[in-house]
Length: 131
Image (cartoon, rainbow, N blue to C red):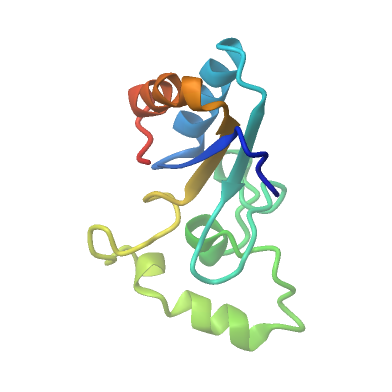
């Protein structure tokens, strides 16, 4: 993405996808249209809620729930899955601020005019985001 000369970008991290979505909704209600939501992690895996939904009894792996990796093919990438399973965050003994997905693994990117930066910052912080 390339910003225009009169645009500013803000990157906000959230502890949950629910809080991030609430902030996105509030930003859109305020008229901010350039908003993007992403999940970030250390291992290059991507979230796939078809596989990683414990409430629908679709969590096929522990790493799928904690590191969003259940969509990694178990027959082709067995070494990758074994290494992910060895991460301390999977066992539940991860330290505070260790970097587990869900700690601040949800990124909201906002592009806006300089005049609206403070307003965007207030909305993000009101919903638990960190800039």
